[in-house]
Image (cartoon, rainbow, N blue to C red; front, side):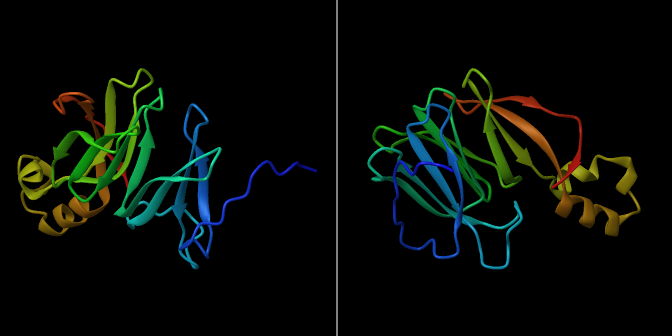
Length: 171
């Protein structure tokens, strides 16, 4: 058995949610699921809210984002929608860093020290025009740009790109 410690009723999550704690355990992150979508499907935007784990008070509510990730120290969190990555203060909700890149697509995570934020990034036509595999293969270029991604790392404070993986992976 288990002992129920707290219960929060959250409007708008009738179908349920994926529920996680922030690394420090102070916050609960709820990512809305659709009735017919029980599997993680990173190419769909979702509603994500953050609750205080003790009081149930809503700290943040983001509609239409791909992902939300907490920093290791719990002081900041990052959200990503199409082409836009923001790092926000948990204390006052203000945006600390904002990164624009239309290739940003679906997933984000902080590095272990919280100094870097890593994001999945797709490819646009200008990236692929440099690749000899697609000189005569326009259909392949389109499929590749739609489904393949790599990983890019940004400095949390400056937003400067510090890392780009050479590896390519499916979404």
